[in-house]
Image (cartoon, rainbow, N blue to C red; front, side, top):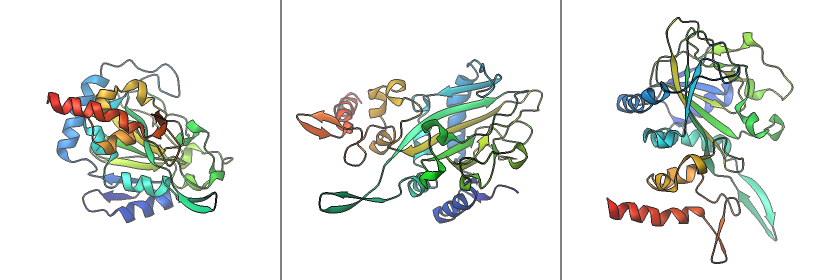
Length: 291
């Protein structure tokens, strides 16, 4: 079995959603424009090459990681608002439900938030990562009948079967919690730099084995999660309010500076449960005055 490939310059969001629903993952070629790819490489490669390698088998003993990417490249905003990524995440994660409130039977839905941002560079000789589901970070279960995450892995360098291209078990988002993934069920993600793998949080996957002698495989991953689960990466400590305020409001809210639904993430302002995005407005105004 192979991963289906779509051209990011021509694919429709409906086609992307259909493949994700069937396989749990899809490769989007030309996900980044040449300018975006060059910009991300310029911003991130010099930084990640200064990072130490990991210290355990799961996170990699010859793998470098770099997080808080919104503080390191403005192209992060282009990724999380990508027209083939953000709408697909809304489709799978923001599933409407109905709840009673007094005499009203209301439709409610969650918002999205960025759960993690990380550059990952797998070095020569690194072994394969254990196959896992990323929604396990917040104890998700297939019994819930819905997805809590849509993730993207963007190739900053070419991904191959030999250099550690992400291993994916297609269709495993349909499995129950008890079925064990087998190594022979996983296939490597092979794609050119600028392409991306979209995959649901319920899909078994893992970093591949780097069998090359000198090649470092570099990818950048972001996750869009349901706003009612805790963000895997703590953006409130990793990113200053001033930095968050410098992004468009849509991105601010994706970073968690928002109140989801009627009562998640609020702050109290003069006795009223208010949207925390309110706190960023003075910072936006200060930045505008200083510009």
